[in-house]
Image (cartoon, rainbow, N blue to C red; front, side, top):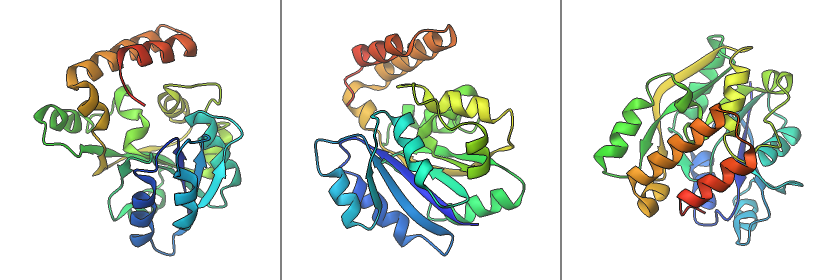
Length: 230
């Protein structure tokens, strides 16, 4: 088994070098490559990724779903591991993924932990232990066999928001899903900028709109209107 890590980026110069360095420092023979799929950043994200030894690519289409699909299309590993640029997996990430795959799982995620002392975010982290729709976002990272990913046709490239929720709900109907009970460290920057309550309101509003069939344009516009976030 070999793993291809895929990191979608857009203006992540602040985080990308540190993340790639961390992933490489905690790698093993299981790690085949780190692919950064960039959405035409206005900063040095791509140059920094290349300097750190990643396969640095500009995606033909901007948007996290399309960028992750593009990274997956060039990946050579038989397991894909999607990681957000502001998220740090456990040092044991490769061994954890290998064990899950060896135990018959086709895909899975970690628990959450935020780089914040806020008790509200500690509550969010605790709730990531529960297997719910809300826990299928990309912040917890996602590993999946390349076979299942291809079988599912990848992420819906037309989606600009909620793409990981949609994909996981769809893929779980075909593959066995594992929640690894170790936390990834997630940046609290969205909460620091907006406040916990404002973020929770925005998340709840957008999820309810999505469940009622709202368009991607309306979902993205609502989220952008409710939050000051990137």
